[in-house]
Length: 136
Image 1: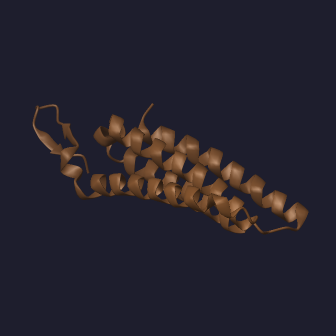
Image 2: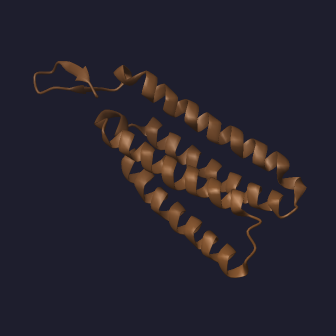
């Protein structure tokens, strides 16, 4: 599976979970975990979908193991951060260090992605002549 396919599939799962969370808050009329809902939708749906588009446009990077690892780290961090933010807003202050670690995990995944964006020449596509051209 490519990094883009993984990103798109996870993004859809995250948006379904985010929508279900929103519907649950509306039904209960308790919006105390709205910040967790927002984190899940932004990090899980929007960011992952944008990663998928970026990776899909760079086939050599899309097929790389490192890009898939970046998507996996981002996704794990997103899940843990969403749970921790929800717990914090429900009054469970013991989740503060969990939120901090998850935030750093998501940051690490973004730094990996930034490396790909600022160093695209590392991911070159060979042409039929054997010459290398930028993946962009």
